[in-house]
Length: 512
Ligand SMILES: Nc1ncnc2c1ncn2[C@@H]1O[C@H](COP(=O)(O)OP(=O)(O)O)[C@@H](O)[C@H]1O
Ligand SMILES: [Mg+2]
Image (cartoon, rainbow, N blue to C red; front, side, top):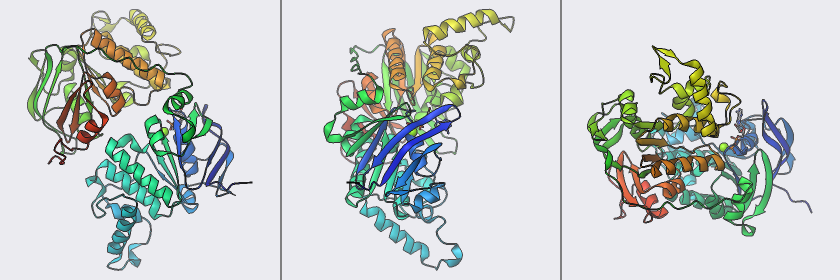
């Protein structure tokens, strides 16, 4: 008996230079199923899906759609075959409306009658509502929340007639509540006979949404299993390749004295949008404070003002009993604030330079590192070498350009620089984003070690599990304000999720 699959990939290989992103992958999705593609960062999930959707072409191997050999050379080809993909980074035109984005390229304005757009809007609204995907169709994209933008992307694929819908890490930009709504949408698609492929590294999500699961590791697709035959623990083992020790709970203890006090802080973002709104925040010595929230609610700006990279408009920041100077990186460093930024290659490390130079960035003025303005080259090499060893950074040499290192090793190097000169506070922004499980464990160990030494950590992260595991207190940021505070142990995912969505205990959405 031969079954017709929605998609079958045979022995797919994809190389990027010397990197083998997909290594002889065999994959099949059945019609009307939700198929999760599970794997750690870098496993090869996005690459594989990009070949289905015509963004990349395989180095070798073949793809069958509905049993027919398919030549997918562009996203347009893929669309013709009924394959639509919702990418991690949306591809919407910001100043067009949601509806305009969806019909983009459909008919030239010459052929459109006066009521054309109105009719299209109604059509789109009806389609969206059928799948529980409401959004304001007549508003420009930039006025929509990230969750709404994702809905536009999904409706775009449905509108264009996709039978196979690929979603690449769709929940990474959603609150837990929005994620649940998304799963309802996926169930509706499935009821309609559509096939859904969902890539993720989150086990809970896989168990909550999928029918079958394929596991990828290091470019290879190693297992395909029915969800009913497996569990989270087994999936974790398959994904990582080893048994994971459950994280050790932090012992709770009384907080020290206030170290960082942020009072009534107003901050504006690059385009004049208000990013922080009379923000209040206190971090005590020896505690890890976790900031949870959906991306874009002021997290980046908060990290930037605390580390001197951005000036504030009103309010004050007191650190260790002294007022910080507004917008001075130097002052922040000298006061003892260190920073692991969200984009380690953009604002943390210089990719073309080696470990030595990157480590020197913040201490080249010190007398151990330079004398009469000249760097102590030999001593600095030895010093870098010892830091690289201490922090277990795997690099061919301390001069190898750091862009050649893996994400995990880059992050370790960054931590080495930021930790070694004994900060009082570490502002760590998405410190484990893009890292594999081993490197993530290492970062978590470093942060709890700092806490053990009486230092403080402000942990800004979109990974709720990470925030819940590490923080003594969890604050939730929404629209530039702290809207909820929960102590270790009393925080439930549901409660945090409500705050993240701007919903208060009363059940009402907070007025902006
Ligand atoms: N455009 C590219 N150029 C070079 N290497 C790439 C490119 N895209 C992905 N890779 C590499 O391929 C591997 C798989 O990446 P990816 O498919 O993005 O994994 P995942 O989506 O599972 O996180 C990684 O080692 C990544 O660095
Ligand atoms: Mg990916």
